[in-house]
Image (cartoon, rainbow, N blue to C red):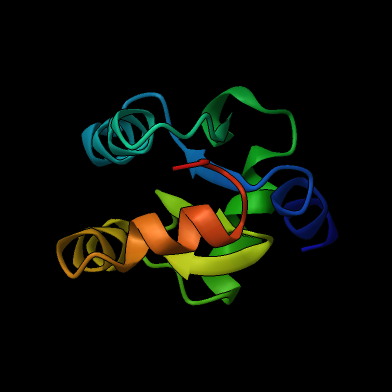
Length: 102
């Protein structure tokens, strides 16, 4: 859990993913399209990936990826991020966390 929290607090936008997850790719692309450059951590390519995956599940992320943090706070998984994007609050959250500037 400490590793997840530490990584999540190092950048304004952080996404935990797996390389084979199409929703992870879609959420990452959404962030890029909004002008953000998130830190992307692929759990299947990280030595501590399984440990971090368990930590993400304990936060309530099921499935464990994608798991999105903005401003160091857990936002949720793909359905949560898409809902925030549709209602316009994702962009506001990214601006408040200084992940985007406009």
